[in-house]
Image 1: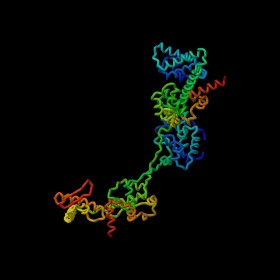
Image 2: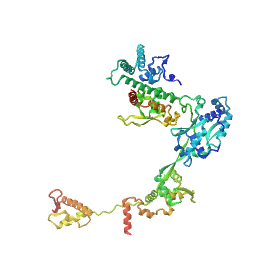
Image 3: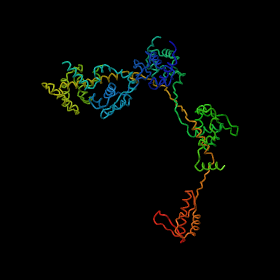
Image 4: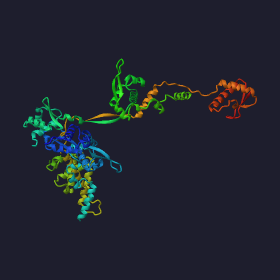
Amino acid sequence: MTPPDDALRAVEATLFAAEAPMSVDEIVAYVGEGLDVKAALAALQNHYAGRGIELVERGKRWHFQTAPDLAHLLRKEREEARKLSRAAVETLAIIAYHEPVSRAEVEAIRGVQISKGTLDVLMEAGWVRPAGRREVPGRPLIYATTAAFLTHFGLGSRRDLPGIEDLKAAGLLDPVDFAFEQQLELGAADE
Amino acid sequence: MTPPDDALRAVEATLFAAEAPMSVDEIVAYVGEGLDVKAALAALQNHYAGRGIELVERGKRWHFQTAPDLAHLLRKEREEARKLSRAAVETLAIIAYHEPVSRAEVEAIRGVQISKGTLDVLMEAGWVRPAGRREVPGRPLIYATTAAFLTHFGLGSRRDLPGIEDLKAAGLLDPVDFAFEQQLELGAADE
Amino acid sequence: MDEGDLFSPASNEGRLTLDLDGWEGPLDLLLNLARSQKVDLARISILALVEQYLTFIAEAKELKLEIAADYLVMAAWLAYLKSCLLLPKDPQQDPSPEELALRLQLRLQRLDAMREAGARLMARDRLGRDVFARAAPEGLRVVRKAAWQAELYDLIAAYGAVRARAEPAFHVVSRRPVMTLDEALHRVEQLLGASIEWTAIEAFLPATQDGEYRKSALASSFLAALELAKQGRLELDQKAPFAPLFVRAA
């Protein structure tokens, strides 16, 4: 093994000392312009593969974390994070898979109104944020997920959402009206 | 390189996620009795030698830390443009025109006391330096401008500073009031 | 993970416990009933589902449970749908009962998809629960350094200001040419002795090019004329406001 180069050591130390995941630009701001940070990140990710710690990229930001298969060792005596309500879990899933979505759109899928606290809980957790307004009558606020959401759930990007490709292919992320028209057309074609 | 064994991975992850340095017994409590923690610690210490992170033992407790030689990377200096206060500009001007001068002399010329911070700011900016002591009772410190001062203000030397007559001609000798100026004009006409 | 564990809080041997508090609205209840058919949601029997729902609500009523209005609205709608589906087809009906059933099915599929997605999301290796970041990172610091700004102009202007402050200040009131009241009295008295005819007051003013001095002389002469009139030594005459003012010796 060749000794680690300066860029690798610098990036390793910086990410190790960081209190939050860092983008490449943020890392450069610390280690300096002269070093190839991207190459160092790739080399580090490779180096840590299979170890007790791993280097991961979540939403274009990098951080070290413990290997997932060691969860059983580390979970001991750590208090389980407060459990999300079913409404909150569903609302989060709908926002993540459909983003950006308005509250009315979430409610249309769930068939019930969102209670006051549900979105608050998700925003307080830092997983959901308002993402502007939809340019339709009433200009409703729309919501999207955050980088912290990707980090928490171990997703490199929204493309890594479990099953999102299958859901898309099955048309299950399309609105009911759209799917309905599709089905009618299919039915008409069959006849 | 052989793949890291279970003990090594477990100890690595445990120490990484720890909130404080851990003794061998504390590590064992996490990773379990069956693993050779001491051997794992030795192997890890060896593995991390020379990297951006190192494993250190202090008072029989183990923890990871960033390599000391990289400490300088972990603080980023950010320059913020700040305007000098009026008191600082005046003080700097007096030092430049009269150097070397003591603080008491600056105050005598300004007609106002200067705070300790004013000279500090000028020295922090690199424009003023202590230039020995005046050989009079009390041996006060005297100040002069620096080469950086000349560079910043685009001056070849202190002789390039405009003289009193130049200032007057440029209208920079702020008239105290209208009558005073008229008096000067009248006086000049009388001669 | 068995989906049944996650999402059928009430299914037990195919029977549903009547706990309406556990449901998040009629669609939620319908979805759980649909899942009890144990077939793909795309192939469920809507008619059977309607039957299940109506039975559930009927049982709840029997037990005198309080049923929220939206469950009853859904029950009424489903009863209507059921009758439409059972009656002979009416080609004029728009939307057709089949279309209504399809819409319901699409909605159930979508809710089901999101419910499953949520479960899979929650089951991931989550930071702080399954994987851990450093608990005590050293932290990165930003040291703010001031880059002091000043221009040469600021410097010399400041010096100019300091020097100007240090100069002794003279306060001089500039001399303005005026004719005092005494002077005017003297002039008018003298000139009046020479003329007994009405004379415009301007005739008493000294010849001058200085507008300011003329104004002062006029004002003082007017005051002198008033004073002399008061003493009975002079008469004043003016035909109209702002008309020329005439004087003569009394």
